[in-house]
Picture 1: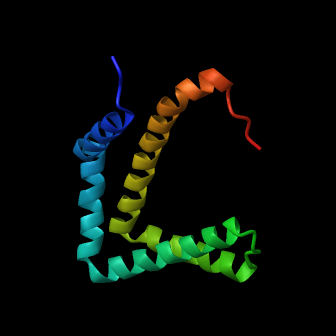
Picture 2: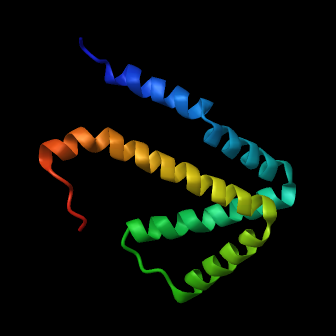
Picture 3: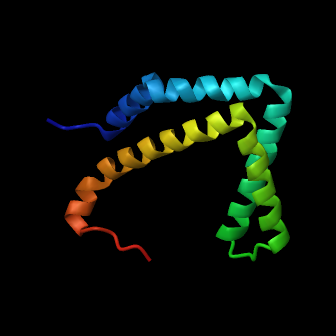
Amino acid sequence: MAVNLYDAANELERAVRQSDEYKQLKRVYDEVNADESARRMFENFRQIQMNLQQKQMAGQPISQEEVDQAQKTVALVQQHPAISRLMETEQRMGMIIGELNRIIMKPLEELYGPMQQQ
């Protein structure tokens, strides 16, 4: 029996959307977006994160000032209860996605052997 990987991937996508973990993430995300100051604070945090990741991926140096600002921003958002819950919930969802990715990659790992971390 031939398996359509795209059908399986779409089924997995539907399962993720129906999972309690995703529903909780959406609830907490909506809670942050409903609070204007929390939304702006979270967007600022995400923008700083993205800028640092882009610089890192481009091989550009990150200044101590940028590191200090990022650390201050993280400390600030972690003090906001809704944003802190969102970050914790995102982390749990990220762990699940990572586990799903390991499961999906298992046939290739068995074929080629474990990928070495560089």
